[in-house]
Length: 168
Picture 1 (cartoon, rainbow, N blue to C red):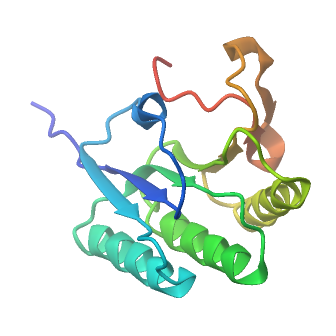
Picture 2: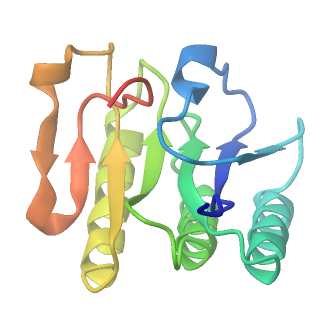
């Protein structure tokens, strides 16, 4: 009899984001769900601290994060960008030992050009740093496209397009 490995799915929601429940369905063996939401008026550094603490708790329990989603708002100022980077780093660190780990950024349907550019830049930075790790970084822009319209840039570790957590 094989023992089922315990893994986690982590959802981080920035202030003001309306979460779409269908995106929260995971595929794969994640057996523990962790939810961290930014409270109205909560500073970015406080959200980062909570995300880092929860990720570290999972690492201590030897429960790697299989999939993490950061539902981002439309903000693109320096504090928010730094917070997203720190959260992403903590989540990726907690993915060590996961098979086919994925980090998704889920922006609102209507995203400013500045925010779109900052997310692409962040994903590119992470993909460059993660070349030796087995982590896929994804961003979903605009309306949910069909499964064949997703653009995947596998060699860079970036998937831009459909964010599909349903059936594989």
